[in-house]
Amino acid sequence: MSSDKKMSLTVKVLLGMVLGIIVGLVINLTGLNAPGSFINEYIVNGLFHVVGKMFVNSLKMLVVPLVFFSLICGVCGIGDIRMLGRVGGKSFALYMLTTAIAIATAIVIAVAFGIGKGMNVATNAEFVGKESPPLTQVLIDIIPTNPINAMANGDMLPIIFFSILLGISILMVGKKAKGIIAGAEVANEIMMKMVTIVMSVAPYAVFALIAKAVATLGLDLLQSLAGYVGVLVGSLMFHLFITLMIILKVFSGLSPAMFLKKIRNVQVFAFSTASSNATIPVTMRTVTERFGVNNSVASFTVPFGATINMDGTAIMQGVATVFIANVYNVELGISGYLTVILMSVLASIGTAGVPGVGLIMLSMVFTQVGLPVEGIGLILGVDRLMDMIRTAVNVSGDATVSTIVAKSEGKMDIGVYNDPDAGILDTDEALELDESFEKEIADTIEKVRNQ
Ligand code: ASP
Image (tube, rainbow, N blue to C red; front, side, top):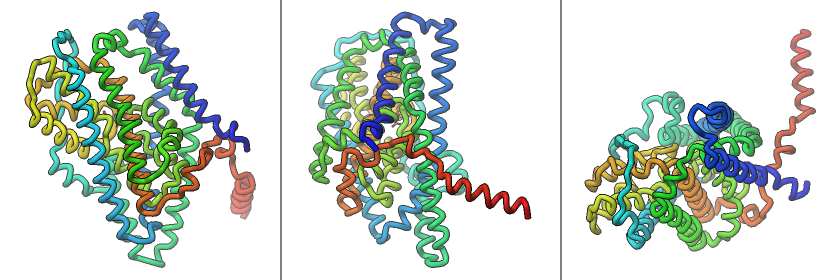
C-alpha cells in the first residue's frame, strides 16, 4: 500500500476545510447569505446545516460507548492497578498546570497590547449570563446516582468513574470474568471500526460545517474587533506552538514536529465541530494508533481532558477579561487577574467541552471580579469563530498531556510515534468487509433456518 494512498483521507479532510472556507467566504462577501435568499435558506441553512449536524451527531453517537468499552479494556489491561492512581494524578496536575499557564500568558500578552483601551464599541447583542456549577456540586456529581442516566446525558466524569469502578470489579472477580473482558475487547474494536466509518465521510462533512460557519460569520465585526481577535488568535498560536511544545519536549523528550504533523487531523475535527467532546473518538484514535499511546492511558486521559482541560478556552477568558476591563475602564490589578486565573482553572473542571461553553465560564469569571456581564455582548459576534480555533487548541492540550503521561509510565510505543505513516487511515482498506466471515455467517443462518 503506497504512502500516497494512505495519506488520502487526511488530505481530503484538509481540502474539505479549505474549500469550505472559500465557498463560505464567497457566499458571505457577495451577500448571498441574505435572510430569505435561496442560498441562505436551502444551501447554507439547508444542505450544509443538515450534512454538518448529521456528522456531528454521528461523532457524538460514538462517544459514550467508546469511552465505556475502552476504559474497561484500559483498566483490565493496565497490569498494575496502582498505575491508575498515578495516571489520574499526573494528568490532573498537568491539565491544571497547562490551563493556568495558558491564561496567565494570555493576560500578559493582552495587557502588553492594551487591547480595548479607548475603544468605543457599539453593540446590540445582549448577553445574559448563565450559571456554571459550583465546585462542590462538580465533586458530588462525579458519582452517578444512575449510570444509565449519566450515559444517556453524556456526562463524562460520572461515566469515567463508573467505567473505572466496573473495570476494577471485573479484575477482582478474576478468572470467572474472563469472558467479559474478552467481550469488552471485541466491543472496543467494533467501536473503533465505527469511528473509521464515520471518519470516512469527514471530508464532505467538514466542508459543510466550515462553509456554513464562514458564510454566516459577521466578517465586518471581525474588523471592528480586530484588536481582540488578533491578540486572542496570537495567544492561542503561542500556546499551541511554543508553550505546549516546550512542555512536550521537556517532560517527554519526544519530537514536537512529529506531534504537530500528526495532530492536524484532530485539530480539523475540533475546529469544524467546536466541541472537544464530539472530537473524543478522533482524538482517541489518533493518540493510540498514530502516537502509540497505550489504550490503558488514552482511554482515561482523552475523555478526562475533553472535560476538564481547556487551555484555549482559558486563553479566551484571559484576553476577554483584559479587553472588557479596558473598554469599561475598570482597573483589575494583580489580585483581580489572579482571581481570573483561579476562577478559569476551576470553571474548566466543571464544564464539558461543548460549543460555546467558554462564554458561560466567562460570565462566572466576570461576576467574580466585578466586570459587567453584559460586556460579553461585545465579543459575542466573533465568538463562534473563536470557539472553533480555541477548541483546536483544547484538544491539542489533551493529546499533549496523554502523550507525556503515557511516556512517563512506559505505556508508549516510541516506534509508532516516530513513524510518520503509523496509523494513517486508509478508508478503502479499513472499511473492507471480511468476506469469508460474511459467508460463514450467512451459511450458519441458512443452516439454522433449514433445521
Ligand atoms: N468549545 C470548547 C470545547 O469544546 C469549549 C469552549 O471554549 O466553549 O472545548
